[in-house]
Length: 531
Image (cartoon, rainbow, N blue to C red; front, side):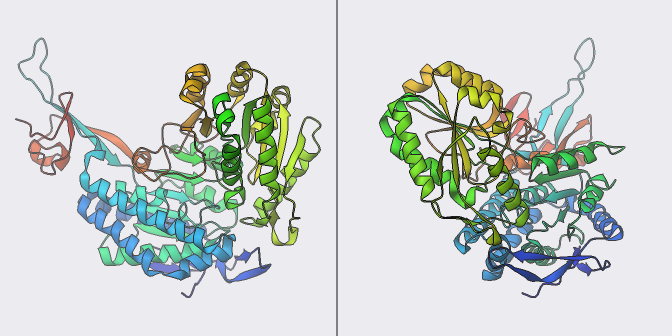
């Protein structure tokens, strides 16, 4: 596929600015063509205007039409063949099988959202029928459901160039909800973004959705993102990335004369607690699984396990030894881009200088800075060392983790109490362990979005029940998820209709329930008609 580096504004292209940048193949040490043009303020205005013009028509489409649009996107993504995978691999150093797995994930969540909006119950239709004879005041007929908020801005993740970028859940869930989308392409993989965006363009054209339902703009500078979230025509925004970047855009979104919801997924430490029964039974297996999770994707997962806590003793010592051995076997590999590699190298260098940390394991092979490679590192400290060093509670993006030796269950509680919000927490144990550490579990329920038992945080099941979120700084809104069908709830709001004529109500609220969706009818879930 020939790339242009232009903005894709609805169905047309634009390259008004002479300011350009290029992507880089870090592993090969070479720049990639073409040059990508910075979006101008006028181009951003055009993208947002197109989205606003499209919104009334797009939101009014029947669910079947939106579902067919999503299915067309999946078909166009498949039709891209290896072009998408090869460009993503060149721009991010992800191996081709990993890129193919991301594409499969896109197909899964896109088809899942298509089925979900066809089923229809996601609108949370509620009906409380009226009673004009009620005393002392008549009871009105009150009905409500979720409706789309308007044009959405999406910022993709650097570490998932296919599955959490242009084609990610943010974009697809916004389309499913009835919202047009403007994507700000990630400057580390702009070619991948353009290829994906053209697939959406083709799907939009063949599905008959209004022009402007999707646009893609490029920008290396922070100003592009700030302009987008502060544009008065934007109703909501979604972001996956660093705490610094997410917080800056969150502040910009909230400084508007009319603030908008800004859903950011940011930093997460994802602690792992190893309880005595599990360590006694399977220390070696846990160590192997932990290091596999730590080094997967060169440690560049938002669910990377950054802290591991266990009780001192023979089993804990065995776990440490095996984990250190497995870390030594990790061969350094190229990171996503120079910025991430630089931040990781600086963070590791700082930890190597700290007196309270002991280096217990590192890759036996040397990393190549020229190729942007990262070696794996495993540090160790005590409960006192952890509590004395607040930086150990911060995410360091890459294959590095810290083992924390605890002397009693009370040390687990002290450490957990100090944790900030996280996407996940993992407990390895037996059922007896869980019973003996209920206070720890209750504490973690307040701190994280996903509790994992005898597993590992890396890897998400794409399903209706998944919650990929957590208290700040993991996200800006802990009630919401960026993965799974609940992601739609970020881009809708409840609208209530009181004493409204039945024929003018949305179909999901009409007496006859023509779509046959589940509704909360006078406090009971039902598909029945209103008598």
